[in-house]
Length: 144
Image 1: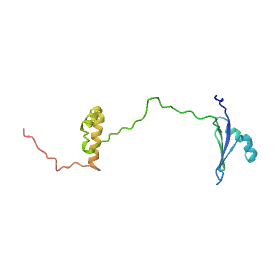
Image 2: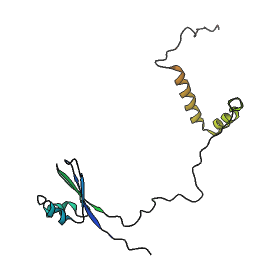
Image 3: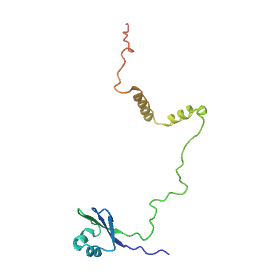
Image 4: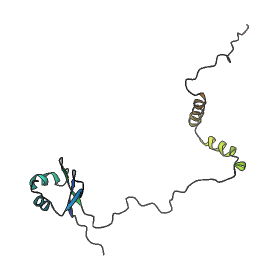
């Protein structure tokens, strides 16, 4: 039998300058204000009303929090039959002939992806500040 959902709230007080007992929980704001008379009930109530921001100063941060009376539901359940399966292939290095696998992979890629990969590999081999080696280039004039 499930119990009805209740909207119980508590007052959580975070003390900024205390070394011990850095936070306290009160069942309502009135009890907190009676325990610490330097804090005005009306001022705190204005801050902590629904949809408002917590009260905060140099010494303290006062928030109103909901009490969870039942377990939280899973945010997004995993669909049935769907799992993440690791993909790995374990073979001896001498038997790992991946030329056909590589060929099939690159045939399945788009021409722009292939061009990006070739450009990336060439850029890696050039290093910093690549310059054209002019000793390799030779000029030949064509005779008419």
